[in-house]
Image (cartoon, rainbow, N blue to C red; front, side, top):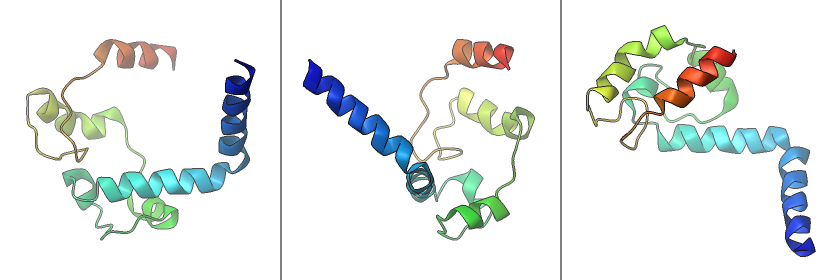
Length: 102
């Protein structure tokens, strides 16, 4: 039991010690996996996965900006709109509760 906690603590330390590099890797992975989505194609990233390109080309958006795309997915469109993998369900209750807390 103690060894398990030690491994967990080490994992937490590793992930929080190098947050910048971890975030860079996660962003690069997300952008790489979703490069062919309709959403990312709109911003002409051309395969770029670095933070500076992402920040300069992809704006901060609101729900209203994505509402049309989300509605398409909710209506059953399985094409790669926002995500390379089909989104099969929405956690509307969780999202609603999260919005209420903000």
